Length: 274
Image 1 (tube, rainbow, N blue to C red):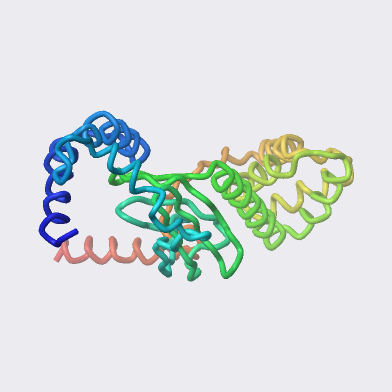
Image 2: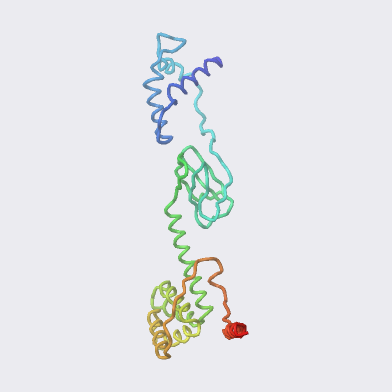
């Protein structure tokens, strides 16, 4: 077959099949093509044999062709990828989820016509269906669930570490709560709020008293703190809600002697008399 004949066949395919044809995905257009091939293209008269159809000539020629290779030719696209802060890698204008344990690590993306696989060395981390849309996020529910569990564990440990640093007796409290099968996270969250409201000294006294009475829940400790406040005639704690800016909650603010402001006021009064 000459070069001109081949180019005319390509032009025929472009104009007769692809031009202005809508399709949902690769499977859809392949299905449409097979139907168009059998019902339209193969029913044409063959240019070199006007008395025969393209399908007739193809059926005669097919047994003379060489068989396809035993192993398909490798056409997958392979590239090195790396996620940002979030557990997703970007490919072909879409995002694909990865395990949160592999964030910001160099990985290998292998994309076929229908699948997007992500590897760590020889280990396959995930296998997604490839989308040809734009701006989509393709997720594995297991990745989201594992990320949520890990985030909860980190937050819980961070809370308990802060409590242990401020009130060492909370370590014993958590051990005894665990022995009873009590949930640690809600207790730790409430104790952290009590630490912010009453301060480490008051919380330490309340925790020690709770350990003596074997009243270990955060609700019992809150009751002890409130009872001690009333006995001493103090005002209820006023919670200050701070924005979640990095480092803001860890700032130490030293109280200043207000007598300096009194002196400034006295000085202004003296100047006004002059």
